[in-house]
Image (cartoon, rainbow, N blue to C red; front, side):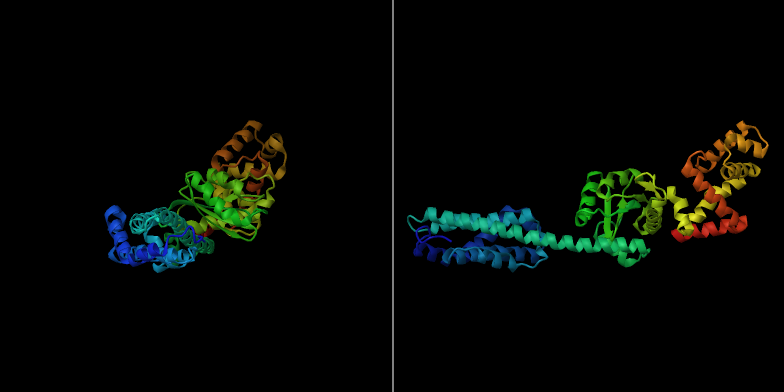
Length: 404
């Protein structure tokens, strides 16, 4: 609050008050002359900006002639315009408006000042400009906070819809509002919620993803964090980049799908893999959901079981007249190594070695690796109890279709 000695005289305050209309008109005219963005606004929004400028003049005069606290600035100036105006003009343009109002007030009111009051008027304008600038920043901070809270709710709803496989019109509308209407190359990454600062996880995922050129939608669901990544070139690499944000424990990446509306398949695989990952204590971090087919099948994941049969048992059955299937079964079930398997099959050791290499080429699993061996052993077991080949292929196709 200004003291009586620092305040302009009553004559100066009266002259400034009488010039209120002229000051408002001058501010609007200067906006029109100096700022192209103002001229480009629709008529309705331009009139709102003009009202804000005039409210700024009026608020200054009330403040100038009153006790000179900042209450009028905060309560009156930006409350004149509707909230939607903060979406029409940005903070920089609002500062242009503030600067114009202050320039007009300083120029015109100094000329109205009584002799000896010029410096006091300039000091008053400086104090007022500080208050109105802080008020503008507060308005945009509140708008950004409200927008951020709304976006967070939309984001959580979209992630939940993907998990539940509800790729309907409402999800499409929400995703478009978040800028995901045309996002491609999408995968779902599931990890554990960190024990410290879980409220910052989603924000940190957005920051890290932005640095690496990836788009993300994320939500915390109890002990797990579900992250949908878009525009990914390599799903495993993107998961590695985001990995430090997750808590301790496994991180599982679902397969890449063309767009968000097919992400339910990736989500189901990633969630199933994250639940099953403890069964493979030495699993890499992150791991692909397809690398956890055996563990997922143990939990009753029917698509994983069908995938094991179709990608392991069926190719081995169809290759080399069944020799590869026979060799895999003897090598895994007997536990006799190369020489013991050769004796069981009545073939040379080199033949067994050659067939193991053919198996690895055919199905992508190396039977000398413990985890790969376990996966193939389960695939053989599921294949043996599956229906006849024609029915097996039909069921596998149906399981894959259900994931789409």
